[in-house]
Length: 336
Image (tube, rainbow, N blue to C red; front, side):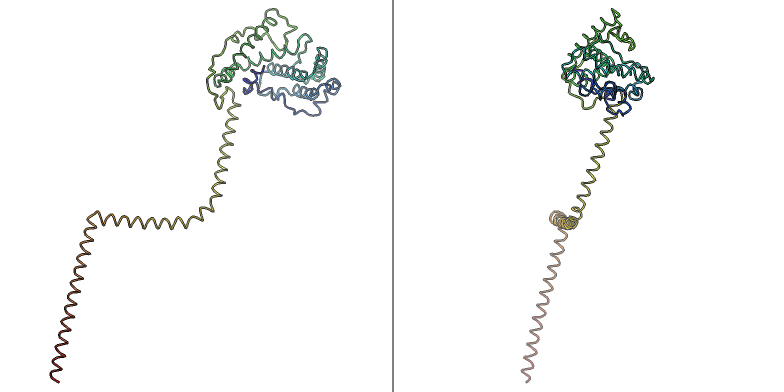
């Protein structure tokens, strides 16, 4: 269901499917598929899927090491392979006979691995009465149950997801009711895989309770889930952002170093000029508006008066000396 994917894609337990989707298989994994490739190669991607199928079955505890329950790991494996096969055949006009041909080829690979005791006690559940549509509905129900608390939190943090949740909830309640009719009331074990303990969900009526949420609530930038995967990712991104900012700042400081050096002389001269004008302004203020100015003016005026008096005395003395010289000249002239 499209709405389900939008709501579940950020949740840690749902992201375990990504580990099963990885193409990190090797030649020995693909060797188990060699005898069935004549059928699988008719459908694009089926041979590669078979290699992943073998790899995941053999190394299931390691690949899903974050899930400690072996029964849950096997459920993940079965839902993953049936969903993956349904995606491949959805691009073809494939009848029921051909679909069962593909499914039985994967069953052959499983039995070969099991014969070597490498299947980790996980059975590939195949029943020709169960179509892939029913498996996908069971997967949707399983994903809702596994991510129950995470769904409740994330739709409360994002109004857009809250809008999608209403249709998602209606779909899940319908699937759950159908599941109860087939696996709980009638005990049709041929339809409900016994080894996966499908009856475990028969009394989980909390599924019928719809979570409250606000469609008008703005999207939260970061979603804090019960698990730590998302918070670890957020921490990593914060560290990367801090490192990038620090690097950029260092680069800018180096780039501006030469310009700072070239401007040093200008700033020094400007500082001296400003200091001079500051002193001049202070002096003018003191001169015009304080007693300091009055004292300066009185002393300068007094000095000026004294200087003028001295000049007058000197002029008078010079005049008297000139008169004396004239008198002496006249006396000398008369004597002659």
